[in-house]
Amino acid sequence: MNPENLKLNTICTHVGEVADRQFKGAVSPIYPATSYNFEGVDEKRYPRYFNTPNQQALTRKLAALEHAEAALIFSSGMAAICTSVLAFLQHGDHVVLQKALYGGTHNFVVNEFKRFGIEYSFTKGLEKKDFEAAIKENTKLIFIETPSNPLLHITDIKMVAALARANNIISVIDNTFASPVNQNPIAYGIDIVAHSATKYLGGHSDILAGAVCAKKEHIEKIASLGINLGGNLSDYTVWLLERSIKTLGLRVKAQNRNARKLAKYFSKNEAVSKVYYPGLKSHPGHELASTQMKGYGGMLSLELQPGIDMDHFLTSLSLIKPSMSLAGVESTISVSVRTSHALLSEEERKTQGISDRLLRLSVGIEDKRDLIADFEQAISKVRAKQI
Ligand SMILES: *Cc1c(COP(=O)(O)O)cnc(C)c1O
Image (cartoon, rainbow, N blue to C red; front, side, top):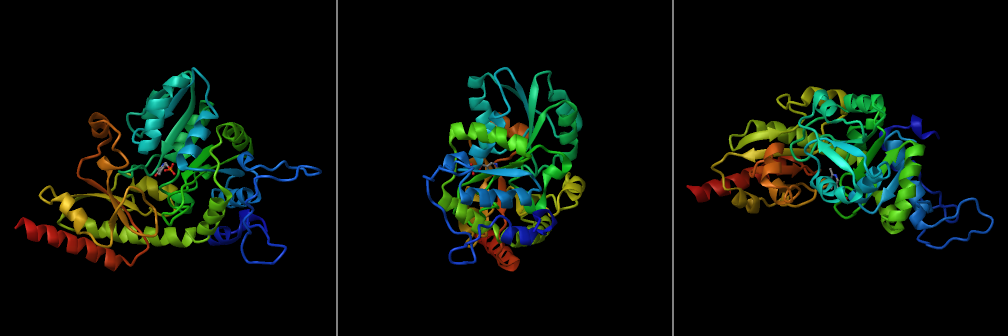
């Protein structure tokens, strides 16, 4: 069957699977070999060459999910991002980065680019004029992330892709927060789509992995640097990731629904002073999100009213767990300035608009009524102590 004609949940369940010809089992077997016979075969297999049966099975599924020609899997989201970015850069090149990126990507750029002689600029905003103003003669790559972490800013994917094309620049997007269920940037002209598979693709908070999807020519370039850098994922984990993605469509759609309901609930709750969710009409990126996203995602951020003791609130939650990571089937909450954005200076946080009181909620698949009840009991506990 041609994967292009299949729908989301069918791609998740079936595309790429390796047939078990020996025992006719229902799932792909695991091929853990690091040593393959090379006599009389077309392909010389070795895990670091990205070509084991399990890696190839999973990349077929990922490529189909992102409507890309090809894909690669890495040992982490950062391995996928760093390898993909560096594959297109030389000493003396310049990179334009959207302001407010994932903390790890931000640190990679500000701490490592200098040693390679790579220049960079962060945009001042997310409008076309901001990207235009940042492009220089030697700009070779533009990097965006939408929705962004933690304020869920929305960047116009089509606009950035067109601007990059017109200037002969490679465009890269971190599509982690949306997942392939909610957003497929290649359809809008983006060259390279990167994911932290640790998040929605894995979805159960038990896998560290990364992925990148693009056309064959770009994937080959990334693979040739990747073979030298060696950030590959073990085939045991590759197999587990293939298993996890079977329910990606079901999970993410449930998370979209829950997040939307919770965002509406928080926006009417007097204990909450601010809600950031692209699915709310009040969100500045709502209209744009409606044009480029199929669902608004499972991430939302909020600020509690200034009088509420945040630490007491966090320890009073019982179902929603404080956590650094996100996108699992369980709901988690994090204080951005202590986790994802802890390494940023106060100045950098201020320019990005990340307040000390910002809480980021990764909404899981639990029943929304239980999540709301947990929030309410925690607020009541804090209030009872403060009186
Ligand atoms: C987690 C994350 C990453 C980094 O992924 P790792 O798997 O932790 O290396 C990159 N981008 C975003 C948006 C993330 O949330």
